[in-house]
Amino acid sequence: MTPLGDLLIRRIRETGPISIADYMAECLLHPVHGYYTTRPVFGGKGDFTTAPEISQMFGELIGLALAQNWMDQGSPSPFTLAELGPGRGTLMADLLRATRGVPGFQAAARITLVEASPRLREIQREALAGHEVSWIDTPTALPAAPLLLIANEFFDALPICQFQRHPMGWQERVVGLDGERLVPGLSPPMQLDLLEARLSDTDIGEVVEICPAAAGIVAEIAERIRRYGGAAIVIDYGGWHSRGDTFQALAGHAFADPYAAPGTADLTAHVDFEPLALAAGQCAVTAMTDQGVLLERLGITARAQALARHLSGTALEAHVAAHRRLTHPEEMGRLFKAIAIHPKGSAPPPGFD
Ligand code: SAH
Image (cartoon, rainbow, N blue to C red; front, side, top):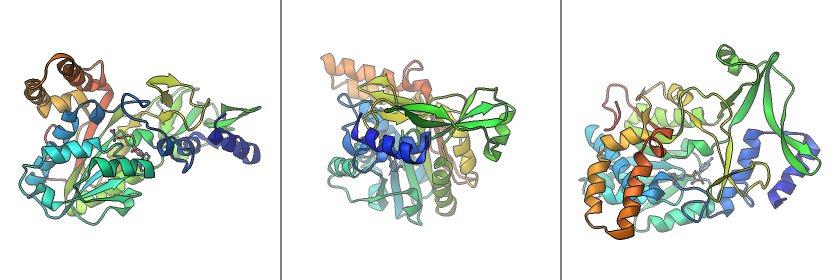
């Protein structure tokens, strides 16, 4: 068992089973043994790769979409240019390079990164050398100013709770012990006001997931956009109206047992965009759009062709594969979805309906 596993076993022995949300939070963000605290995580050597790590085109196109929306709203200055969970800082670096030519954009931008991991903050500092950057712990600390924000694969890392339908209400899925092993278990059945509306569209035994932190985070962002202007783009894998168990562990680019070696695998769940859109209710929210469709509308094919002109051999092959991976419906193009949040009465960022 890992050191974090030993800590969790002791805790569960003393105080009883813990929720999946507590388990996820400990595994990902434990200050000493957590996954994001200790692991190289991204890219070929890590456990998973993300759109900005696949191709520079991703950050470039998202950056230009945000810059266009900033101009459409009268180029407010100063404004907060924020990212939630920037990972290695690649998306922000590509965004900043692509928007260099947009008059006044970078001079007006106050770059603000929301990042929990001290280790990733250091990597981000290096990736963004030459830019003035500040870090905050939570979106609550975002300044009272116009806000342009991107969150890619951030919400899928937030802890979720799982509830399983039972004839007497709901059982929470928990993590308990079988001897010295961590094993999934179920709480006694209970009535839950929170899930009242899901009684009509679920069957006995079916699982519903809830991400307790997500709505509060979106509400903080939407409140700033409503008051001061701006826009937020949220991209992640998931769908509309969560159904079923999507909790998963990835280690070394393969699915793993989430309970076998706590702290060593990336734990995620699909993002349910419906409660995110509801939490942004003070603002306008676009229709959920497939990542592939969004990137096509933002001109990824033309950008890919321009970059291809300077490439040959294996570099060209890798570039063509990256374009396909980001956009093709059987790769990331359909599994990943995007929504944008913008002030009522203003135009959405380009690429959204
Ligand atoms: N957006 C990046 C990285 C995605 S991984 C990319 O697309 O490559 C998730 C990121 O969110 C990591 O940077 C992780 O440290 C950060 N993160 C996870 N949970 C967080 C939390 N509760 N608060 C702040 N940052 C968090």
